[in-house]
Image (cartoon, rainbow, N blue to C red; front, side):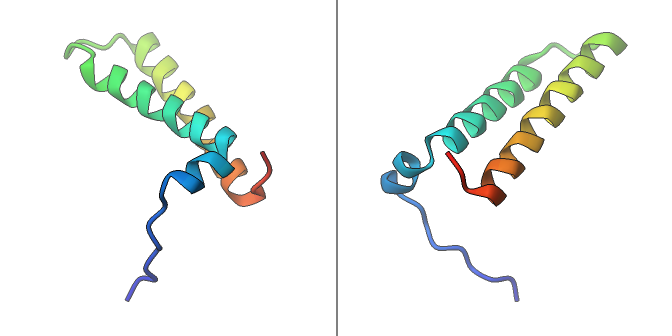
Length: 68
C-alpha cells in the first residue's frame, strides 16, 4: 500500500516559495500546452517538451534539496 502524504496547507506554500514558483511555472506550461490547437509543429513540440523537462528537473532538485 502506498505511503500516504499529509495534506499541505498555506504554511507549506509560504515555507517553500521557490518550489511553489517552479510548480506554478510547470502548471502554466501544461495549461498552455493543453490549450494549443491540435496542430503541433515538430519544433514547437520539441520546445514545449524541453521546457517541461527543464522545469520538472528544477522541481525535483528543489524538492529533494529542500533549499529555498
